[in-house]
Image (cartoon, rainbow, N blue to C red):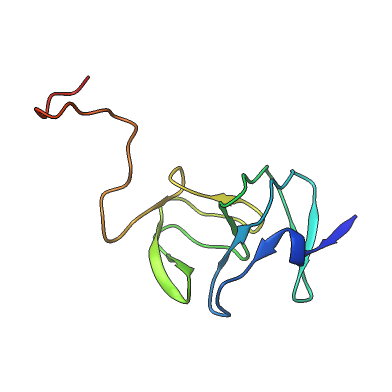
Length: 106
């Protein structure tokens, strides 16, 4: 079943190669985004990015019409785009390491 993107995805700029999920998206869903069908190949959490087209290793991830990072692996359309397959080109990626105020790791 194909769903309208109005309740599923938002593409923030026409140059973007990712869209943002407006709700939890489930593998197997097909979403019509401006007459392009996006076939989800994995679950996408709300607020996360999904690839709209293939992004090759090293190529820019574009959101808001501007590059926000680079792919650290090939990303196929319908895939979740997050820290496991992209990195920021501007700041160090978030880690889950907790740091004490003294700078010692917990």
